[in-house]
Image 1 (cartoon, rainbow, N blue to C red):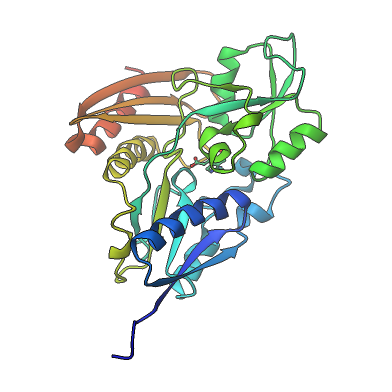
Image 2: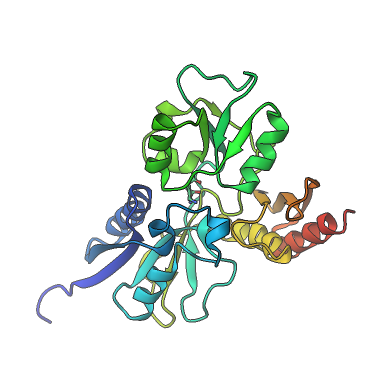
Length: 297
Ligand SMILES: NCc1[nH]cc(CCC(=O)O)c1CC(=O)O
């Protein structure tokens, strides 16, 4: 043996600041557990990053933020990719399985308001292109109007400051990872605003056949169960990432509870419900709640 074998691992990421920060969290965790590995970050723009002038619903297609990374993974240009679970399509290609999940960061959404604007004012424009967020905020603040806003977190904050928006809604997880907590006006509780399935969780995607045991200390079993439950709910409702669906699962001991929200496309009929049971039944619980909400119970 000629000294220490250096194994190089290339980690693929979108090139937004949040995506890179998230990938660095994973890189640091691997580095700590396996200092012998050589880790390289490979960033790339995805279709979803390139098309900024349209609402995602209009662009259509699923997995707009993952396709380029999938191709790089398949071609062996990267060895794993780091994603926000929330952005992952429900169907994952068989040859590019999800290897595992991070511990969940705070799953709540936050309001970021322009200086001097208060939600109770008679009117105001909130920028959001998420039907899930708009539906739930309309209930809380019927006085407000909503307009689509696109771009990564940085871009949206800038658009709010420079354009005709009085505020925006973002995930606290991303804001925290970027160290931007100081711009948050109000944190919305998970009852006021049920989060998106997977919000706050990072998913690691790999190539079938590769050994990912170097990730073992990073991966979180609870997040895997939570993902199973929340994504079973979304899948059973046939929803992609732009459908008005919310799902939030929590584990306590051997019990898992799931809060779900579902709204038939282009209707105002918001259905909210919850279910709980043993963690072993995570997928079944998600499917059952989906069926109950869809049938109107
Ligand atoms: N769709 C973009 C996206 N994907 C994941 C997050 C936040 C981080 C997370 O949920 O882990 C964000 C930004 C946002 O919604 O504010």
